[in-house]
Image 1: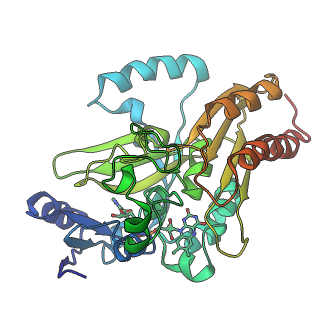
Image 2 (image 1 turned 90 degrees about the horizontal axis):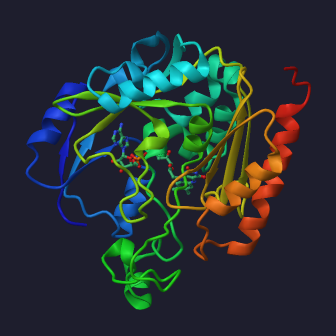
Amino acid sequence: MAEIEYFKPNTVSEALKIAETSKHPFRFLAGGTDLFVNRFQGNDKSENLIDLTFIEELKKIEIVEDRFHPFNSPNSQKNKNSNTKEAKITGERILTYLKIGALVSLEEVTRHPTVRNEFPALENSCRSVGTPVIRKTATLAGNILCENRCIFFNQSDWWRTAAGHCLKCEGDICIATGGKKACFSKFVSDSAVALISMNALIEIASSSEKRVEKLENIFSGNGVKPRLIKNNELILSVLLPMGENFRASFKKLRLRESLDFASLSTCVSLNKRGEIKIVLGSVDPAPVVVSGKINAVTKELVKECVKKARIVENDVFSRKYRKEMIPVFLNKSFTEIFSNWKT
Ligand SMILES: Cc1cc2nc3c(=O)[nH]c(=O)nc-3n(C[C@H](O)[C@H](O)[C@H](O)COP(=O)(O)OP(=O)(O)OC[C@H]3O[C@@H](n4cnc5c(N)ncnc54)[C@H](O)[C@@H]3O)c2cc1C
């Protein structure tokens, strides 16, 4: 591998300053379980690494008050407009959040009592990532930003040179579809599927501003550059609204239960107001999100999910099988979350 420059900041502001002044392409390094695999395969060529693992302030899980709500942000007119709309729909404001620091390991997430009590679907999704060793090292922010995957991209440089480079690695064609315009690499983060279904927010900082967004808004839908976060922006935390009485059900299809990435992941949530939010992973370059109400015809919601998912032949399981498994998972989840529901 080429020589790299390695930085070891102790605080968020130090990390952001290094990022701002870096003259060479760089990556933030958290657990490294995704980044290093991509580097070894020649899929990440950034020269410098900014290691976040010494930043203690990003390793906490705590309960915080409502100053994070994106619709309260004074910076964004768009957000202010949404505020009015949301306030009308919900008729109330969310007051507290579970704030999970960016560097909290997936294993710690699965062990935290509030996660277990209030957000068991998040516990299940984090527990389904990789192996126990990976979950000890892998962080929540790293999982959310885990690079999109495709069987034609996640190969050695040799393999890709022989088969031809695809759109995601500077080639001029998508090998999965034969198309020249769109890359269909799959969004694969398991934790993000559960987090989005429970309306998680994400706190992002650069050296000049701090902002809070709905987690689903950071995904672009473009497989080549799947996220709308700039290279010099750091994820600080993820915020989950508390007191929503979520009933949520996470499911994952994969080749080997012990290790593999998802070929399809789903999470269905129902909150105390009877709002349903369905999120699909591994079937599109971005999470597929469909919302409804408790009295919606679930068959219609399932149909909308299948229609929205741009599944192509880029996985170990066939496109047809993955598509057929969407209703199977969603119907099982509906049965789980609707049992004993009283309006
Ligand atoms: C064998 C194996 C199996 C796996 N199985 C799964 C699986 O089933 N499901 C799954 O979702 N993933 C899986 N992974 C991928 C990976 O382990 C996880 O996604 C993991 O959570 C990544 O976290 P990390 O802390 O190691 O991230 P890193 O590898 O350190 O970083 C990943 C990306 O996030 C960026 N980043 C990290 N933290 C921040 C931050 N705070 N701010 C801004 N950018 C940041 C990095 O620059 C990099 O681009 C697997 C990996 C392996 C090797």
